[in-house]
Image (cartoon, rainbow, N blue to C red; front, top):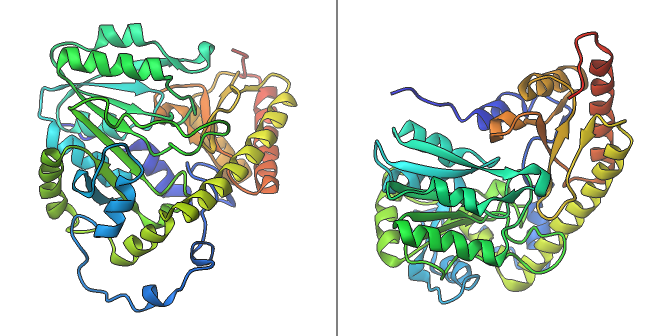
Length: 378
């Protein structure tokens, strides 16, 4: 069976340590341990025995995760090595060769690739760029059939930052109920909203539902590699068995730091920090786009520290990203690796001057390319 590389992650792994400015990641400038432990007693962490931790996650961590969801207890939670391991276990537990899977594009293409590597048939429901990256639920209804095993949704969306409305969420659940499909809700960007309330989880809306989240995005703690799955106790047990094969357990020190991060006051501080960086970065990006003589465009930011920036000249996004890397020493993510061409995913959740410097370099490369004889506006 052909193996599909995880193109986005492979691209980042190759180059993220060799450029001067990396804007290809999808989190904010991450917090450090001193930020997290400010006002905390560090001794319990320093005296933590480095023995095997609880395999399904420490009791306190699972309780604090459960408290983020309605009608949820620690028995509904499995702690994983990031959301990436959680997504891998969902696919390997639920899917078999020949199953039909529906994903939304553009999006983080982990489930897309995992399903293909398992021999599944994958369909894509595309967000509508001209409608602010809204999901066409009527089109989704046509894609989901009685053969559909799994629908995978990232909400808020990576890379566009769009957020499903309550009505859209209810319609999606209804579609899955009618077809008997599993719903996989990747909710790692909940808490990154630039205005208004935190996006509600799908949790509690459907029986055949698996919710995934992590500390990487909203809390800016990607290096802890702590994620989780929230589901019924029965499916948690099935996933747990795969967890034991894959990693045995997440890191004990990481789980101790995660317990601290999910203390309500500390989580509030981390979310506010992340949103401040994201708002400032988006403002810098939007100002830059206005000065680019129509070569770039972007929808108004709604959530996340990332922007899905359209460009209006003929060049594959992987080639454009390579030109930017070589000529400007800036790394951005090609839209093709997220399912939609002629876009770049650019992370803006850093100090404004760093974002401004990177964008000026990108603009210079684009201006040079636009003058080339082969350049054609789209």
